Image (cartoon, rainbow, N blue to C red; front, top):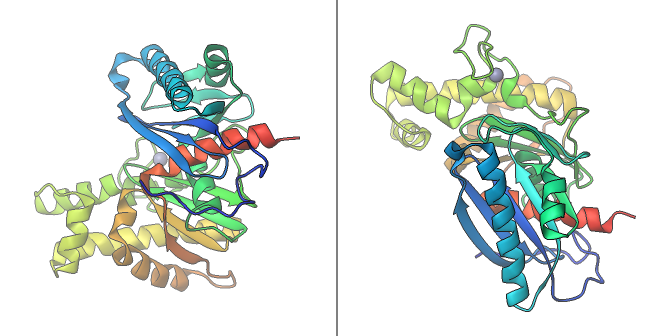
Length: 322
Ligand SMILES: [Zn+2]
């Protein structure tokens, strides 16, 4: 269990009683990453559960409430005091109203998750978007620590971004900000899950890299395998990877024109490629910028705990709001 070192002022109230913890859940299409997090960002306990989304949204909501209740009980059994609940889910999330507006993976359609958590656990609660809270955690506790303007880009099965300024992630007017994966970078490209042709996500997500390689070679491969083969000099793999980098650079150039960030933190499965991603992407991005200042590209530091840590930060922010 890695415990991110946190400056005393970042997440903390400073005066929180030593036994206080936040119950944090990051609910994905396949699994729930859960934690008890202290106000200074240290993790007191983690556990994981299967989401089993195929049971339908109502059953998933029940599981979320059961798991959250179980975590609060675990905290009390360990002599800790649960003071709030932070919950992160994918899709369109309205943080202001605490409603999961829409989710492809979990089937949510306007679910008042925050109110349901408050009703079940009797604790203050916050609901956030999985990538936005991941960005929040990376900006405040992870790779973006010490910078004010951070763009977090999660490249996995899909692609999504979070724009974090001074430790706050912006959700947009309808909870749908940061969908950089659905910026069209190849108008004649493959069809995206959203219906359009050539979205960044359809061209350069980890899933798209594997698909493209399989189309060209007839051999199924993960993105990690394509990266390894490209590094080993295999021509088709190198071509697929080069095309991926170019598409990502096109997307990032658009993001930089819009957001003018100091750093771009790259997370998700594709970021596992490390320097094989960051180095060529930095070069390709530089070629596309004219008057804009180049952002620093950094690899995410918190791994797949970013979501639960970010959910905890969101809950703590709720408590600390004057
Ligand atoms: Zn799309």
